[in-house]
Image 1 (tube, rainbow, N blue to C red):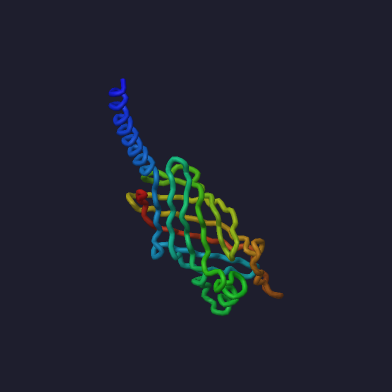
Image 2: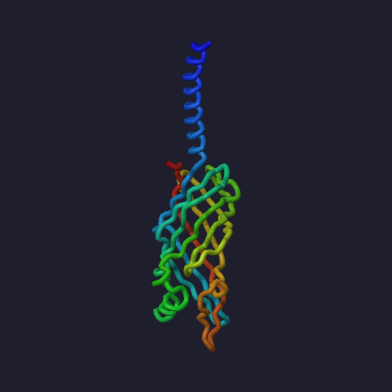
Length: 199
């Protein structure tokens, strides 16, 4: 009886190790990474008032989203360079950076994904919801984005558009006596990157 138990223990140990390896590989296969290319990603903003519309750009510093295809759990960040904000008017931009977004004090605008709702296909088009935290001007705000995706080979394109109620979120209203600015700004991100298996 003792000899039989001694023979069974190594066999069970080997089986446990094999199953653990297979499970780890299966879990890894469910993990993916989307890495966005700053040079191929366009970030624009639009601010309207009764008289005219202001349009400008920001620069993406870096962008990476890691997610589990089964659970939808996500991590990573899209990081925008707040100091890169440019509306084409030196005076207006100086006011924006110094008084509104205070980019010297808060140099980054970040979206941190936490959950992807909806399936991400291996190829083709899809639309998913991405829930996470939007960090701007030193404060975190829960935000869920609707994100159309187009995947072709290893390439992925994502289009994101959302409103930032900056005055409601504690930033200064830049309106003056004769010029009333909108209380929210539209952000649009056209992102291009590649989708990879997690390592």
